[in-house]
Amino acid sequence: MAKHHDTGYKELFSHPEFVQQLIEGFAPAEIASLMDFTTLKNHSGNYITPLFEERFEDVVWSVQVHWQGVTEQLFLYLLIEFQSAVEPTMPLRMLHYVACFYQHLLKTKVTSPAQGLPPILPIVLYNGLERWHAAEDIDELVRPTPPLFLRAYQPHLRYYLIDEGRYTPEQLSAINSPLSGVFEVEIASGDRASLQAAVDRLVRLIQADPNKARLDRLITRWLKRHLQRLGADIDLKQINSLVEDKAMLAENLQHWAERERLEGERIGLQRGRQEGERIGIQKGERIGIQKGQLEKAQATARNLIALGMLNDGQIAQATGLSVAQVEALRTDTQH
Image (cartoon, rainbow, N blue to C red; front, side, top):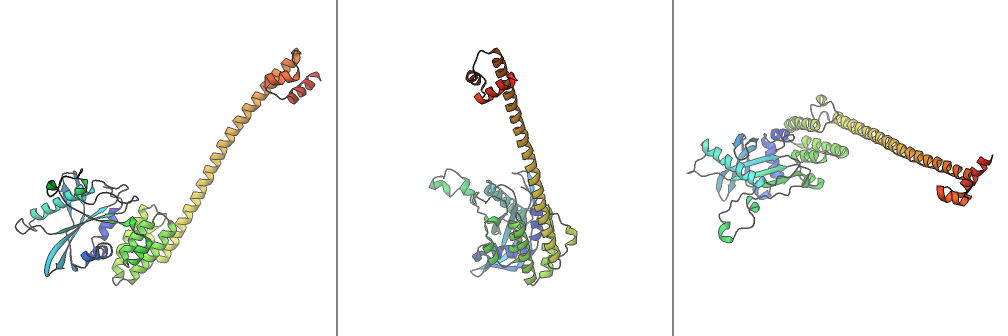
C-alpha cells in the first residue's frame, strides 16, 4: 500500500471535525443523520495482519448512533488507500482488517462474545488516477456464483467507497465544507490554474468556518506537505497560514507555474534543436550519397565517351544520367 499520500490525510482524520465533514459530506445521508458527532472518540492504532504480513496504519473512530429508541456505539473504520492502481483484492483485505480489529476489541476487553461485536462501517478513501472499479463486497469475488443452498455460507462484508476523483467541481462546490476544498485541491493538482482556484476556494471555506483558526493551522500543515510532494518550487517556510498568507501563496503559485512554463519552453526548444540536428545530419548524409553516386556516374560516362563506342543516348541509359548531362560531359572532354 503506497504511503506517499496518506501521512497528511491520516493527520487530518485524527481530528473529529474532519471525520464529521467526511461523513456528512460524502457518506449516505441516512447514515449521517443517525450519528451524534459530539460523541466521536478516536481509537486509531496499528494492528498486525498475519495474512498480508504487514503492519498497517488505519483511522478508527467510534460514535454513538440513535435509531428506533436505541443508542449504540458504531465504529467508523477508515482505510486511506492512496495508490496508482486499483487494488482488486480490497474486499479480501478489508474483511481481514475488520476481523483483526474485532479480535483486537475482544483481546483488549472492549467487548466480549457475550456482549457481542459492535456494528462497524468500513470506509475506503481513495485518490488514485484510475477510477476505482474493484469489487466492494467480498462475495463478488466468489466465482462462479455458488448454488442457492451454498450462498448463505459465503462471507459477506461490504465497504463504503469514497473515490475522490469521481466528484466533479460542481458536486464538490455543493458540499460546503473545508474537507471538500481539500479534496478539490487534490483533484486539481495536475493543473496549476485549477490548483490556484481550488486553493482560493479552500481559503474561503476556512474563513467561513467557526473554528477557522484551528482549521487554518491543520489544513496549512497538510497543504505544505501536499505541495512538497508535488515538487513545488516554493519557499514553504514562509507559508504559516492559508488565510493570512494567501496573497503570498498565490504569488508563489503563479511564479511556480511561470517557471514550469518557461522550463517547458526550454525543453521544447532543446528537443526541437536536437530534432533539427538529427534531420540535418540525415539530409547531409543523403546529399553526400547522392553526390557520390553522381560523381561515379560521371566518371563512367567520361570513360565511355573516351572509348567512342556508344552514342550519348546509350551512355545515358548505361549510367543513369540524362542525355543533356552526357552531352555536357562530352563537350567538356573535347575542350
